[in-house]
Image (cartoon, rainbow, N blue to C red; front, side):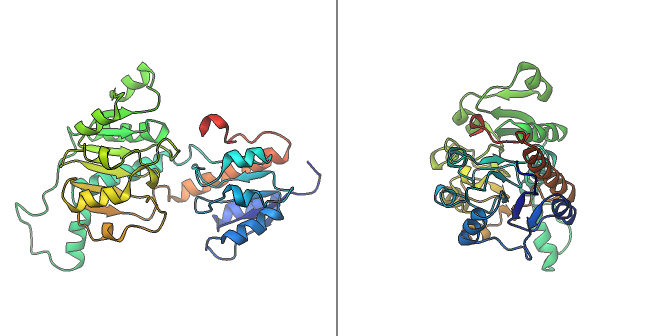
Length: 328
């Protein structure tokens, strides 16, 4: 690499400590406000920088990468997911891609449990009742929810986050079941007291709660499609803190409206922030604005990962969190 400092473009506002450290190490162009860059802005940035630091909201496709300048050699994503980046095209053009895995595991797992409890115990309905002044006092039959202890939790995707969810759910007395691309080692299964299901259909049909914790890939797109959603028990609840594209959102909405699924807790959506308006109307649905990883600690640790990836690359080495083909 040349001796002069590398140029870096950051697409969104980052924690102040992260931005300060980036400015100390590199020639950085930061965002003045916290609005997403347009497609044209991203293309212009990629034409004139060595390193791009995007976030999940920045969709970088083959057409955009085809217009990138020869200087662009690293896309250091601020986030663990990378399905918004055409990694294969980037590799073909000699552009490395890195991410920030591992640092958001506990935060996302905490939010998963929060959604499970919020839906099953009808917490938002109770909150709305208090905020509107409609509460008339305690009643033996008011806002009856379900007990999570003893219920079957089916985890779709038993990676770091899925296992962190399992640890928390066991503390609440839930029975742990999972479906994964690869079965866990026997000792890991034993640690979580987890039952493996080779057939996702069979698992889904028997669970009280389904937690989506797998990444979005071509093979997981609409993995929970209309046919599979119809396998759920009418009293079942589905929670998604992973990627919205894993669930057919329209099919889920129809079934929730028809009472064919008891409830849902969603932190992510199939079309980004363009949420199906019919979902907002349902009392048995808890919707959050993609805040599963939104802790101060997590955001700083993400920034530290980005800094390490860029610094390692600048020193002529492979970024420790480089996205490789086996991850796609």
